[in-house]
Amino acid sequence: MASAAAPRYARPFAVAFLALIVVCAFVPLNLWPFSNWELFSRLRTDKETAWEAVAINRSGSERDYPIASVPRTDRGAICSVWLRRPGTRIVRIYHVELLLSDRDENRTAPRHRTLAWICSAKGARAES
Image 1: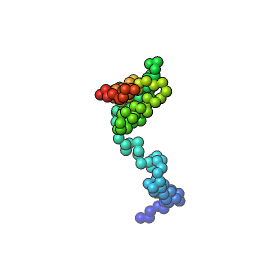
Image 2 (image 1 turned 135 degrees about the vertical axis):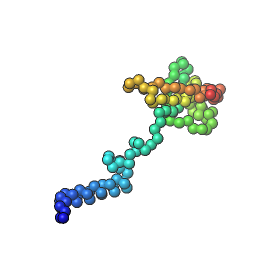
Image 3 (image 1 turned 90 degrees about the horizontal axis):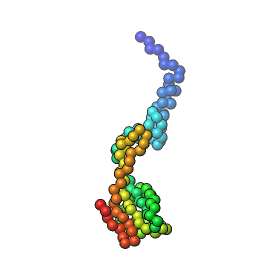
Image 4 (image 1 turned 120 degrees about the horizontal axis):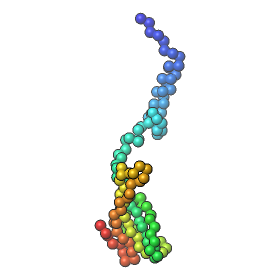
């Protein structure tokens, strides 16, 4: 039984396809459908945590400053840096939690702030 010959375009297509797969394996490209599926390979949680500093000036008005992280160093040193801002009287440091699944249509879920400590001219005072 004789087999039919493959079409002329089949061999160049197969070579190009295999070359693309090899290139995607060694080059940090993330081209679908040859991606490394980064979207699904990382741990995703329902809870986001962050830190926030709230500076209170002499007139009592507040200003929020999001902080990526709080270093585990001397709180007094951190407080002295924040209190050097002009007009700042008190700084409150909060630990902020956000539950991502707690949404109302397109509205963001409310944040839950927990006071971690207070910075004042008298020094850092833990609240937790």
